[in-house]
Every structure is written in structure tokens, then in C-alpha cells.
Amino acid sequence: MDERTPYERMLWEKLGPPLYYCAECLRGVRVTPVEGDVPIIKRKCEHTGEIIAPRTAVCVGKGGASVGTRAKVAWSQVKAAVTGRCA
Image (cartoon, rainbow, N blue to C red; front, side, top):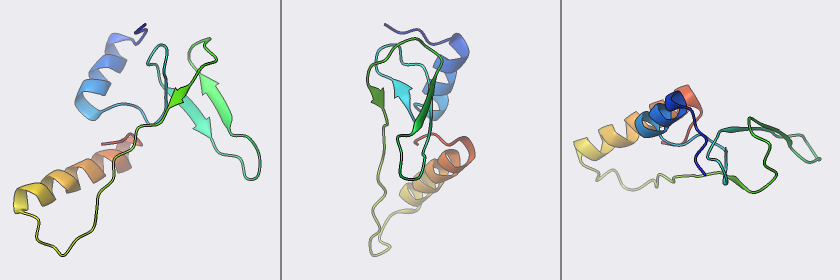
């Protein structure tokens, strides 16, 4: 069931999904890695189920990408760096 706020829905549509989110309600989840231990998980919901961590990969090639593709990849990288979200 989708429990996101209108603001969270707008961010999802404009920037993409959060780095981690609850599989049941789609709300963002904060995961803090801990060296040699279980990560610290802070949820905005009361669910205890699965956490989704969507990722996209950018492959490195011989530089034959078009200008449009390079611009699209660069924009995705900027969004990911600024927001911490997958592009």
C-alpha cells in the first residue's frame, strides 16, 4: 500500500526513488552502515519487512557515446551526488 506523502511522490517522480525504501509502503528508509555489525535502520513506518535498494549501473566504454547520452549520464550522476538517490 502506498503511504507516501504528496511531497515524497513528487520527489519520486522528479528525481527517482530514494536510496532505500520500504517494500510495503514505499516510504524512504535511512540505513546507516556499521563497520562489522548490522546496519542501523530508521523507518518512517512501522513495517518490519523488506527494504528495497534500487541501483543503476553506468558502464565505462571506449568513449563512443553520443553527446545526448553523455549529457543524460552526467545529469543522472549529478542528481545522485546531490540527493543521494539513484538516478
